[in-house]
Image 1: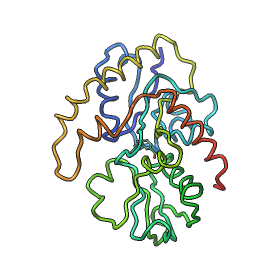
Image 2: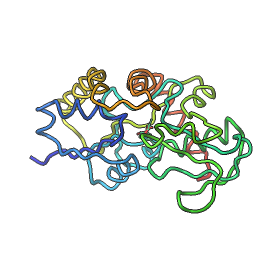
Image 3: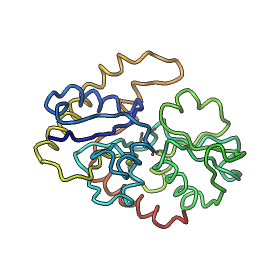
Length: 244
Ligand SMILES: C=C(O[C@@H]1C=C(C(=O)O)C=C[C@H]1O)C(=O)O
């Protein structure tokens, strides 16, 4: 039987999921797993190169037959500590915001908040396209960087201020009709990985400028509950009203 192709995010936030998957013999023998930056997870799922991806939620409307599977996601309820607008000037003075080429969700979250919460209209550029006074940065590349910028805006925190809701950055999405038994086993593997977070943290070399324990245990919130689904639908609605 053909293996189910799975792409997961290659960042620290996904280590518990990956550990859970790798610990499940029954899941492992049914899949081919690759680890990719979020924008590549998205492209691989959109192009049919994988059947399941831990994909940035912003791309879900562009994928036909997309179905969220399981009970877990990469989310936060307030500040997440790895999704930022880093700026050299106060937010209302930003002229050009450089987007993060690893991201799909957080680039859109920045656009949604700038338009609807801060009521601002800066220019947006891709990395490498020119000068900027502020940038979106996500994932491990943000660790230890907060001190490098005069103004730091955690987008999970501002989404919560704006809507009162938690946020979903990435979810497990499948494009293939999967056997419910496999989905159950996959979900159990994710749950097991999350239960081993303390062990995961013990394996990561300590750094003085980033608190892995606080990040994986408190800031990230992996439960795809009803509030997060509500937030996800609201976010997708806001994205549909952006002039892209
Ligand atoms: C919280 C995060 O969630 C992520 C943010 C994503 C995005 O902006 O597209 C996609 C996947 C997740 O890794 C993060 O990477 O810091």
